[in-house]
Length: 457
Image (tube, rainbow, N blue to C red; front, side, top):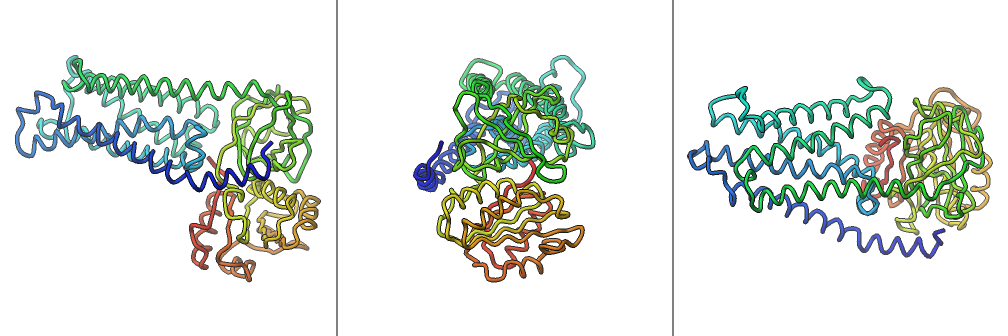
């Protein structure tokens, strides 16, 4: 397991290398985009020589836009591929957000591309002739990409079961990539004949296929190191704490606050992968714990998990950890509902080290029955001399804690005396976290000091 010295060494190394690695990757992407766009000028299609003035400019612009869209489309796999190297630099939730944003940008470019192509040709419709099949492949690509984005944006309205959507999303994604390669190779003389452009497209396509195989192999390797459920206990209303132990004695190295993907070999559950933050701490290496609240098709069945069930773990992921930040600044944690789990991991780690900093935890729940780990909080308070825990309840008043939502006025009251230089960790439902973040920035806390983990991927 990772020791304290290992964690501090990782912190120093991460802060020293992360920005440089990000710069190199971004620079490489920019160079790749410029190289792709330059093909429109260095390897012109012979047919473009019959165009002049603005018509020639529009056709060149269309080709440049199409090639840029192609590069960005090929980028979608590594952005969503759960690649640990990229996670260490950008964090997996950040990569997923880029994956979504990149999809919108690609769709916009692919919509503009055919418009710029057809206007100089004085037609807005592709003729129904066999020789125009590459153009129809491009049209199919546009439709497939539009369907992909619509279903991703409004998934629950069309496909309620997440696993079914994910299978469809991946299958359609590969269809889009195949349509893209076919369209590029045969729609223009630039790529139709042997030469550097065609070789480059085929080479990149092969590289993407190899990357996909590598990603899938990585997930298969984790099955060599299974865990076993040692205990399932009711933690709070609709919430279960699941304790896991490694079968072969090889446990997961992770930082407090990180998450992983879990697949359960249970007769009552599907084996689909689900992300959960660890609620245990690496300072207590005897077990791995996740805490699951019923809030969907799969989690509603979590109570059926039994002692002895096999579990496979792919991770860890994320940069949501106090270990990766300054060990001198005051810490403020604000959690909504089950978003408390990474906070629990960090608090257990901090308490095991008897951290002397001021640490404030605000935990918002609907009512006291949704709380859990009361005994653990008491033990944490005994070991952390400057720990302040304030439960907040939104549905009804309780004998303890505060009543009401964490709005601007309540945050001002609850965080009175807190340093504006504090590190702030936010985790919970996206609407709550977005609002709390805006309020904290308005209160004078620097945005750069606010670390967030949305309770959604």
